[in-house]
Image: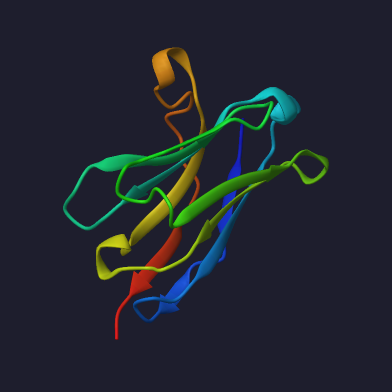
Length: 119
């Protein structure tokens, strides 16, 4: 059973930065397209950023220019560098593999990383 372990969340003031990490248990990690999602209280889980196996990236409009997704295949890890954080970035952040038509491949999610942006 695949496992995703997210870490790096915390409480940060508006304008601050955080770096999230997600370790995947998949042996095919190096060729997986990896996604970061977030879910704010009472809202649906939304796609934030995507990185393909060859390093191509895509971002939601709301985070473009502020967030950077990257990967380190030797460590089976995908990162999300978040700068210029805003209160509306407050959410639990999750990672998953992009599956058919871009939907999450797995219905089981990790515990997530709580990000709270508040003064």
